[in-house]
Image (cartoon, rainbow, N blue to C red; front, top):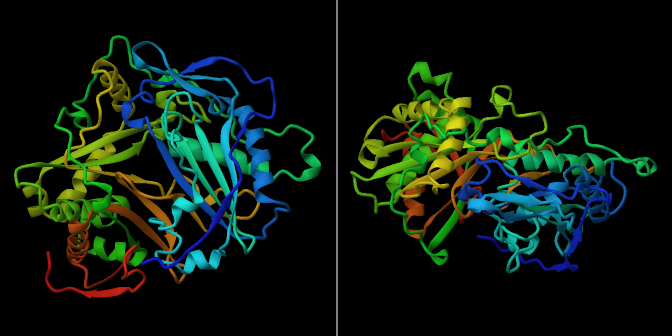
Length: 471
């Protein structure tokens, strides 16, 4: 349990607009894939940086200047969203700007690293390092990006950010932040000459619009019309991160059949383990009820076939779903579930993305089927850990918390080795069972496994688990 107390003094928030007053004043429509109601929310993340590096000067001043320069090229992000016909979203490129806050905290980086659970979500003190006020999470007619730079006593700092998900997917927003970081690294002597980011942004949202007429070619079970699930109250939710080292993942794979052992990815294996554990721990599921695993799969590997230009920063992902009866999910082998996850990921083709846009328009942007749903995304390869504002790569870069769904995040363990953190939110009564079920499934075929659970009192007390015949 966290014992850290910190005080943060914030300056008044300001709007930072494009450095040039001549950015276009126009309205730009979002794509039909951008427009789904599921994306009408803000996504939050955070970076932590140590002091030093090549940068000279105050991180708040440097990042604020670079942000303004980057918005010359990404000027739609300085605008405001509005609805046009049939509630379709468009961005009004007003140049009003994004919200920027500077702050100072009375802690050092070492204090944050030593606290439970360390520099990985869930961060128990994250409210102090982010800017959340009434209206800041609205979708229409409000800033599309919020950034808070918080200086630490040691010379390090944190960069918290929030962005409107209809405007960008994670890869698109990292592209924007890399543009800010690249401009922040431009030396003082070169600032008079206007700089451009290496990757030029591209809008081209029409490439992910529905066809005319819309002709969905897949059933898209992710949008099945199912009753909306009840969600637990915030007081009844526990948040912890399950941390798997590379040796842990290798041990789990050892329990798979030979044809999967070398082909299945760490995401596919851990997704299967965690989904089964979650289903078993939520004992409100009846045996014949459907359990749903929804994975967020990028279509950017099909950029050429989809005519996505280089620099495209819109939402270019699909929500693909594995649906199984709870009893079947818990009684079949782990390998069977891994195969299902692999098939779902492979289904995201150019035609699948076109079909998604068609279905969204044909059915009036249906919501995701949330009943008994476990939503997972893999953020390890998006590039959070490489965003360098001039102080080197971050100590941590990734989501700042978990409210709904979960994500795979690249982290370092206490001894500096690479690991995968998966922050999870569950009802209090289900969390202990979730841990037990995760360990049970992980032990199938693995003689020894070390897994850390972050966010609870057992954090960083590595429990070496011996195979007791479970599974």
